[in-house]
Structures are given as structure tokens and as C-alpha cells.
Image (tube, rainbow, N blue to C red; front, top):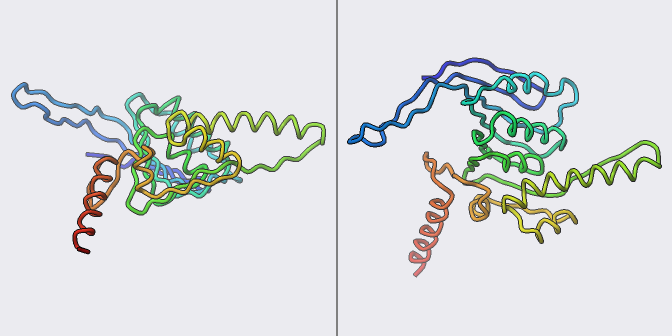
Length: 231
């Protein structure tokens, strides 16, 4: 049982929350053992472009900052990039309030900051036609000429470390691939590639959620079946 709670809108994102009642699932009948999911609040946020210019994300983050230890966060991502600082705010929020309790759905694409946000989640769910892309950042700096170089060097170091932490340390790109990315190479990936690299942990296909490994086995089986049909 769940109880609808609240809806909060920013310019680009929408946050919903609902209370999920305690659930019990029998795991061992002989030992009378149950798996218990405690009562908690589920926060679900639909992610658009990271480009809040008027209102900012104060209302959204204020609501999420009130999360308790059992509450969970879901991202529904359909995003083609935007401000890195906004993505960093979500990263900080996950670290503070939702570590090991975050799920992301790639519905239907995540490019640039959208891709990074997807990678921040503990459980990462895709669909057969989800689309994904890593690339380096873009930047525009203004101000006194004497300050621009220092500002750029400071920002460049910070952003590269942020990207490296999310992309390389989790094994989603190799160190060599990451170097190429920083030099301008874009990495476009479909669902199969996302599963092979471990970026996706689960896939929703034919109405069921299966693991990435199970999905790759399905693709392999389907390929063998088509090969037999051609003979």
C-alpha cells in the first residue's frame, strides 16, 4: 500500500513523493523467515535538462533534505546535458541522504550530465532502446584577463576529478578511454554496450526486470536462433 504525498516542480524537473507501507516477504517457510521492508518514503524525480535559470532547485532539494534513513530515491532520466554544478548538487545529495538507496531509470536517454547522473545510482535500469553518451565538458569564462587562466585551471581540475570518480573508478571507461574523452572523443552506447560495461545493472524487457547478465544471454540466444533460421 502506498499513499500519494506531494508534487514539486522546478523549471526542468518534477519531484513526486509517496509513503510506502511496511512489506513482508516470506523467504523461508520452514524457518518462518521474512524479509521486511520498513515503512519509508519514496522520492521519484523526473530529470529533464540541467538548466535551472529562474527558480533554481531550492524547493526540490529542500524536500529531499528532509529524507530519513530508510527513504529511497528514484531518478527517471530523459536528459541531454546541462550545468555540471546542478549534477554535482545531486551527487552531494546522494552522498548525504540516499547512499545505497538510489535507483536510476534511463527513460529514454542520458547524455553528458544525464549520463553522469545515471552512473551515480546504485541500481541502474535501462530499456531495450535506451541511449547514452559520455563526453567532456564545455565551458565559457569571462572576467579580467588576469583571472581567466587561474579560474579555468581550478575548474578544470575539479571537474576532471569529478568525472574520473564517477566514470573511471567504477570501471565504466578505462583510463585510456577517459583520456580520449577529455580530448574530445564522445562515447555513444546502446543497451547492449551499457550491460557489457556494467553501467546498466538491470533491463526492463517484455514487462519484466532482469539483470544485465540475463539480458546479454537473451541477446546471445536470439542471435543464435536467427543464425539457425538463415541456414
